[in-house]
Amino acid sequence: MKEIKTILLCGLGAIGTIYADKFNRCSGENFRVLVDESRLERYLQNPVIYNGKTMDFNYVLPSESDFKADLIIISTKFSGLDCAIRNIKNFVKDDTIIMSLLNGVTSEDIVAAAYGKEKLLYSYFIGHSSVRTGNSITHDDVNTIVFGAENNLSENVLKVKNFFDISGINYKIPDDIKHAMWLKFMLNVCANQPTAILRMTFGEMLENKHFMAFAVNIMKEVQAVAKAEGINNTESMIDETLVHLSKMIPDGKTSMLQDVEAGRKTEVAMFAGTVIDFGKKHNIQTPYNKILKEMIEIIEENQDCKRLKNLCKSKYSSEKL
Image 1 (cartoon, rainbow, N blue to C red):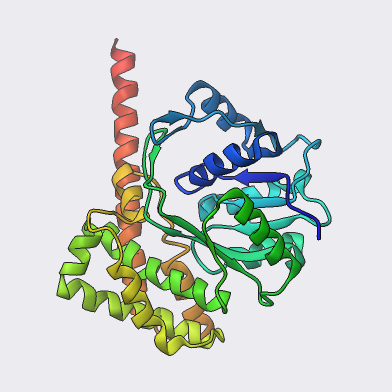
Image 2: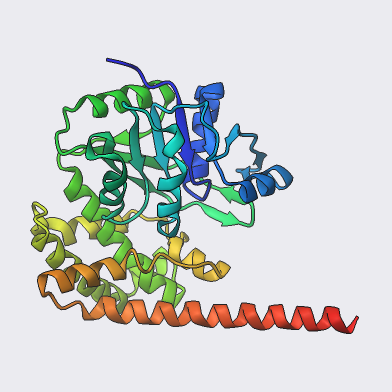
């Protein structure tokens, strides 16, 4: 069985940087970070700082073709997935393995449509949230990549397992990767969205009985569409999700709350939007997710208006000077 030696990472955000640091230390010259020209210029002028250390990566542009990857990991936001799929084209070879660490339950199908299901492994990140402030990212190193295939004895699963063992990457290979992915999706849908609206930490969320009752109603909508999609053991999903939530750091914040606080676009389309779409497909009502989506879109529009007003003020002030 051929070993994984060359690695390409696309997406140097809160999760991508965690693994860029690890791959850079263990693979060195065999590791590349894929960026476009604007990001390359930005990273060279203002490097990413991870846990107080300035990161020095080997960057590669989408137009380059002299590097081929045994393993490609996509860790962008969902809004950047289509661009990532286009940009990795020159680095894919016949036996390349592609993993998407994006939240949600649809990115794998999107990647497979472009490069073939045989190259894809189902995967996601689970661990403590990292905190991003500008170009600085901090994380406590509690992180795991959960991955697998519909046939967990596949050669690609074994290749990645062996590579992660050598590289010191924490991982889990569940018996049913699709059930595991929908569990993570349920957690994100029920926690990320309402905490982003209410500006609550995990501790505040867990201590508030009204919030948790509301979260369970959100989970029930995810449970219903998961069952309709043919996911196994959906009856245990809510209890499993509640256990996962109870293990979160009390002072921690969901990634969506961090996005809202920083004025960034959220992944509401991937969370509530996906639940709503599956609901329409299977004629299942999803009122909680519809309200969440509308409220977060109101927040985003308000942020856009504030940015525009600040831009106009800045331009007006400059013209007066």
